[in-house]
Length: 97
Image (cartoon, rainbow, N blue to C red; front, side):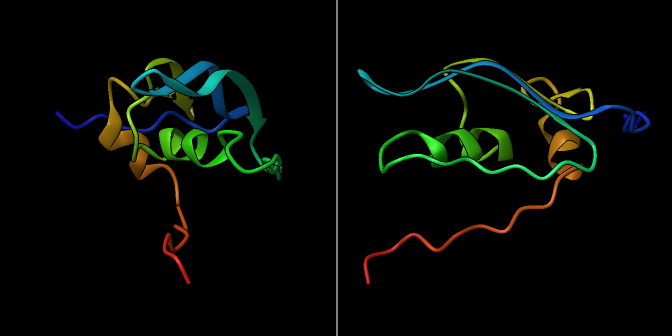
């Protein structure tokens, strides 16, 4: 049986107490946010603030150390394939120029 996405209502993305660590270095320390369907948002901060690590965890490219990520009410940790099917991502090029 294939899981189906729930109907869209209210929250498109919910992140609770997200933490991402690289060894002893904590890159993301307790980020929580709610994004409603149709909202536009941005993450602003200086280099090293954890913006890319936060988005990488939401996109499913990086496993969070702890916390929860729900995409249209789908738990991204327990149903990563379904969660990824619900989002579109434009990745940045990461290289020295």
